[in-house]
Length: 142
Image 1 (cartoon, rainbow, N blue to C red):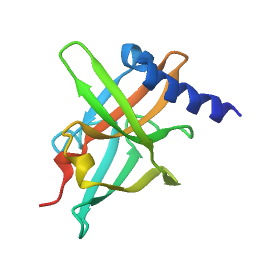
Image 2 (spheres, helix red, strand yellow; image 1 turned 30 degrees about the horizontal axis):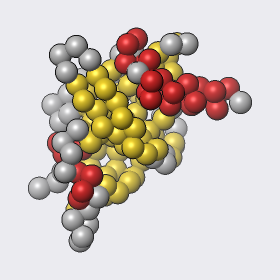
Image 3 (cartoon, rainbow, N blue to C red; image 1 turned 90 degrees about the vertical axis):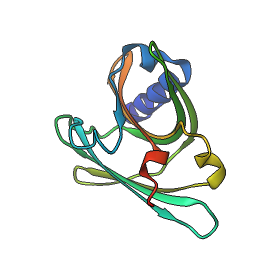
């Protein structure tokens, strides 16, 4: 039951912008992947119709990934003074030990938006969440 409430909080916080005001937010990009408090591996594979299949693996480093977390696709727009998250859909994950894996397909149309991001987060305190986002265009295999 506690996990359900934690999940609902993260979803509501992202939709309402609460998490943005009080949350540590980390951008995952090819240069930052080795220095973030959570280790990420992101791979893409082109599909025959112009879509891409992505596999994202997140594992604990300085931050321990708790049992309650959320993975999804969204539009993340960052300006000098704010961050805006627009959720698109929740992604399924599998957890083996300390590694969380999500494999999903993104359409060619979705990838046309440079702000399309994989989002990974968990509640930290009553009014905040730890958030990571990776703009998927940066991880398209050549």
